[in-house]
Image (cartoon, rainbow over all chains, first blue to last red; front, side, top):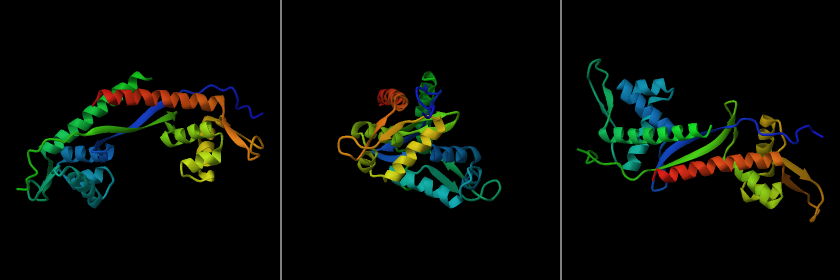
Length: 116
Length: 116
């Protein structure tokens, strides 16, 4: 006897990862969403990458991959500006994508709250 | 001009991975659930592992890890039986865990269907 029989389950919480697909292919998940959000907030890809502890190169890779899949620009980078170092803004298309993810994610987290 | 401006989002489908946590720690996700289900159906860990294209050793590792986290047995293996090769059954505790995962997963997939 192991003393492990007839036990009841402890309190288990559901958790999830949510992503958006296009034609069955992965497009955008929480990591890319966080990156876009951080670029939107900081106005800088390098600052956003730093905040999320990823390399600038990796951050651009994440963006370029999604842009290629959707055939649309998400981030517009520019030179110059206030500090002379350039910056980046999220395109209207990118903002729509962020809104969609955020909307679905909120519905998910509201739903999960009803399960507990 | 890149011709990539003023586009509207294509049809994007949400998808998710669901798992159960205990005290904030990952316990059971779709892979382990599929393994338990396959053991339940086939009555054999080695057959279940083969069906899921994992090694027997890996399959046992998945089970042992969850058993250690919950301090309960999920799978009972035995020697002999019909074909002399032994077999495995899911304990009542394991069945409860599977039912919980399946229940939450159904609720998730029903919910996601309402979003489309």
